[in-house]
Length: 202
Image (tube, rainbow, N blue to C red; front, side, top):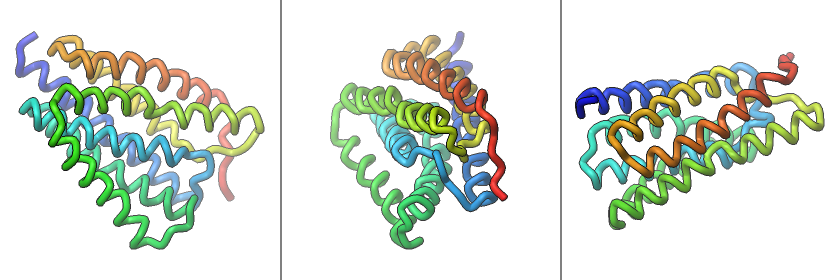
């Protein structure tokens, strides 16, 4: 597969993973609740986007750079909403904290070698959905409602599969390793959340 075609895998994966935040944002706003949505998972999503963005800049890889800008832009609002709904932070504090955190992370990562920045991206990618899986398992076991949007999980899984393909064809070992594990964990999460009775908020 040619280099240009490989980059299009990254672009397509980025579109899906950028879009994944939208169903979750819509559900939190609609139900005015964020019960069961893991704040830690979405913080790691934002840090993962920052890590891969810095990694792309260091490698001068357009697919990675362009792909992670919109991902960060759509992930940060979820963190804002969760800080507001779950931690009851004021809107100014909930809005400023994740934006400044991502900016600081990118600046720090740009000072590191590309291999180390990629390694941090791998670590974030490996951990991303693990907190949500643990939270979803706990809430299912205790028969508690969940505001996790299934549309978000489906879009996430599809995007991860495309990034996995990108890692195979480029080839790029950090991206490949990250998405092998990420796809596995997300499949488990889809099974857990998809198999539970959805509780509508009045």
